[in-house]
Length: 144
Length: 172
Picture (cartoon, rainbow over the protein chains, first blue to last red):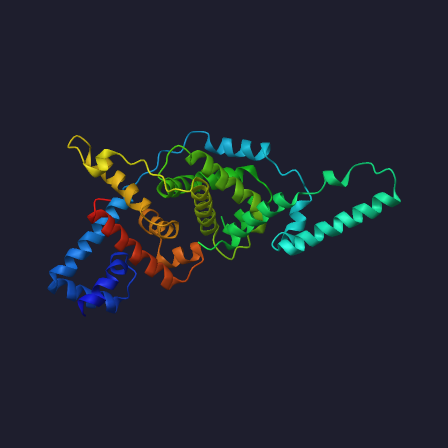
C-alpha cells in the first residue's frame, strides 16, 4: 500500500470502519512507515481532544420542566394535526386550502347573518403558516 | 419493550413514556447541544425545545428510522437553528487555550481545545464530528441520522479532521 492511500484511510482505520483485508494491508504499511504512523497518532490525539468535551450535568427536574412547558404552550388550533399530513408539507396546497376556507367563510357569512364568530379568529396568518411549514420541513427533510 | 410499542405510547401522549424517553436520551441531547454550540448558558432551553418538538411531531414518526436517530436529527437541526439565529459559532475562548498556564489541569485544557477546534468547523462538518467522536456512532448510523450517503460521511470526516489538524497546528 502506498502512503497516499494509507493516509486517506487512516481515519476509517481508527474508527474501525475498514474491512479485514484493507485493515491488514494498512497495518503492514504502518509497521514499515513511521510517517504514516505519526499521522495516525495525531488523528488519535485529535480524537481524544474532541471526546474530552463534556457537557454540564442535566439539571434536576428537567423532565418536569419539559412536561410543564408542553402544557403551557399547547397548540391553539386542535384541528391542525388532522390536516397536517396533507396540507402542511406543501405551501401551495396549504395556501390553497386557506383560500378555500376564506372563500367558504365569506359565502357562508353572507348566507347566514349574523355569524356567531369571526372566521378570522380561526385562520392562521401566512407568516405563522410559513414558520410552521419551515419547521416541519427542516425536521423531516432538512439537508444537514 | 419493542420500539413500536413505545412509539405508540408516545403517540397516545402517555406522560410516563415521555419521562422514560427523556431519562434515556437527555444526557446525549445535552452532550450534542453543548459540543455544537460551545455555550453552557442556553443548553436547557434548546434541550427543552428538542424534546417538545419530538413529542409534538411524534404522530408523524413512521418507524422508517429508529427513534434515537430521529431524536439526534431533531437535536442537530435545533442546534443549527440556534447558530443561525446567533449568526456566529460562539465559543467561550480564553487565554488558557492560546497560552496554557501550568496551573490548569490537562483535562480542562483539552476540553477547551476541543471546543475551540469544533468551533473552527462549519455546522455540517461539526455535526459529523460530534456524532462520531462524542457519541461514538458508526458511519452507517451517522449517514442515517443526517440523511446523507455513507461516502459523504467519510469525506466529511476526512476533511473535518484535516481542517482541525491545521487549526491546531496554527494555534487556532
